[in-house]
Image (cartoon, rainbow, N blue to C red; front, side, top):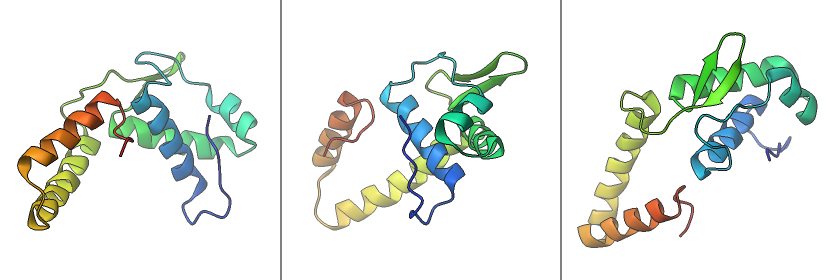
Length: 126
């Protein structure tokens, strides 16, 4: 379920995008599963359909969704090698890993954290 916070500084479409991304990554929306139509999701969240369309377009650009004209939007299969989002996350990861090593974390400890994150399928465990 997506929760909107109107006090959040982020635009509503970003909150919707992030909420849907979390549902896909966590497995709550399975690969290949059809997402609600733009109008249905907009009605359930009581927001403008253009906001949902913008979130869907952003997720498609990041490789999380596939749109099929006349059929709707579907959760993409994981592992999109050419994903712009993947490259962005890898750059953030590299910078974080370098900083963690500088602060005394060993490569073995980093590897253990990665394995823990992979086991939780979304990496949200601490």
